[in-house]
Length: 451
Image 1 (cartoon, rainbow, N blue to C red):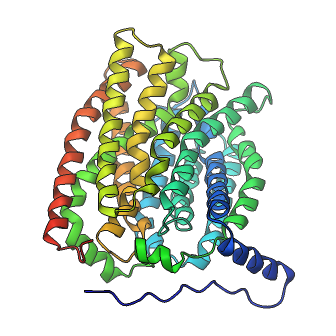
Image 2 (image 1 turned 120 degrees about the vertical axis):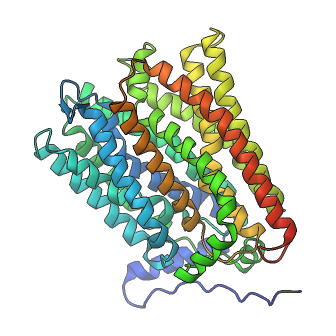
Image 3 (image 1 turned 90 degrees about the horizontal axis):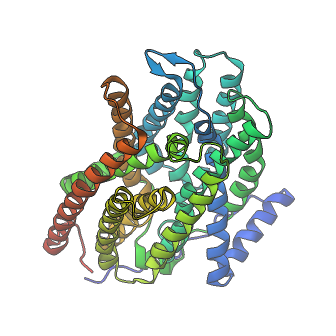
């Protein structure tokens, strides 16, 4: 049955009055009328900078060791990591509803409010003595967990979403290394204590964040052609979210379990990269974080940046599964090569991390974007990403606690090796299972109109 024509999406109008409002409308209009490459470059770079700056408030503290202090019988750095991750996890659970129902006009304002709240918590982290300041790392994680959904909302539902999303997704690979490099530099060269370093790192990133958020907010809405190819994207009511889960919930189970493993490994490689690099001979090297993360970003971008060229939404959706499985295999193969002394520690960490991100990035950008388009589901990607993220960070918290309270002697190299092997086997099987379930739904046509 032919669907009714979709009316053009109007450009949000700014109220008449201030010069700034008229300039904003003018910029938004010019972007809508500009060549495709200009629009892609503008939105990609704006979103990239926004999310990179967010990491400047989240990850610099992980470059410190906080040695000599413990709380509840746990090393203080692990206490801080757990505190922030718990806040971040709770933010993801709340974000399932918050992001799903977010109005586009309010995204930019919330980005700024959330980041400023996290920065204020870092000020209190520096003012309050240890070990009582761990609560402010929990508060720091609470607002930051919702920034991704707000930023990606500007990108989703377009014919070039994958290309822009690939650039955006590389931000959390590149930004993690950059944030830790800035943190290490502030301590080594700036002589800033590890307690005040997170706040001063935020001061470096706040200006670019405000500017890039304003620029991103000038992004025009999807065109009628975008809507026709990728379905309309809109806030989802409670009833719509419930209906979606009734239809796809069972197929989401293996997908989310696989994503939980990827999130756990990705978080550990970010939060304890300092310890892993120190164990492999890079303990006094500040630029190793940014250098390796840049290489990983370019590898991931080169492999998945061309997804937007695939027009068939269902084929692109299933191709995501192949990329994710390939990522699991790459992680295991490079780990095996390292233990057979075939590659250096640098090659091992870069290869294994790239494999993790081959799995992690599609779930955050392409997997659910193409799923909504393939099954003709009106809604938004943020709802699905936040379901996966909520359980992903819950898994991180559980593993962190088990690691601290189940006393087993091991090195960081041994810990990551075991995790990489387990994830590669289990992740591959889970992704294949999910692919089969979604194929059955597609063939039966229970998800709506089949392409």
